[in-house]
Amino acid sequence: YMLKFAFKPFNNILYIKRNVVVFEKQFLQAAYFGMKGRYSKAMFNCNEALKIQPNSVRAYLYRGALKFEIKNYALAVEDLSSAIKLGD
Image (cartoon, rainbow, N blue to C red; front, side, top):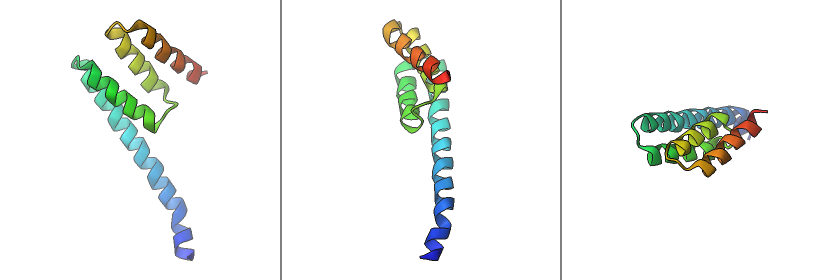
C-alpha cells in the first residue's frame, strides 16, 4: 500500500506530461495540414487538441483561422471569440 501511495504523484505527473505531448502533436499536425491546404484534416486535429486542452487559446485561434480560410465566417467568429474570452 505504501509503495502504491508513493508512486501516485509520479503517475499524475506522467499523465499530465503525456497530455501535453499529445496536445502538441495534434496542434502541430493541424498546423501542417493547414499549410498544405487540407483544412478539414487540420480542423480535426484542432478538435482533438481541444479535447485534451479545452481552454487552449492557440487551438481556438488556429481553428478560427482555418474556418475563416474556408469562408465559414460565423463559426470562425465563434472560435476567435472563445480565444479572446480565454485570453482575458
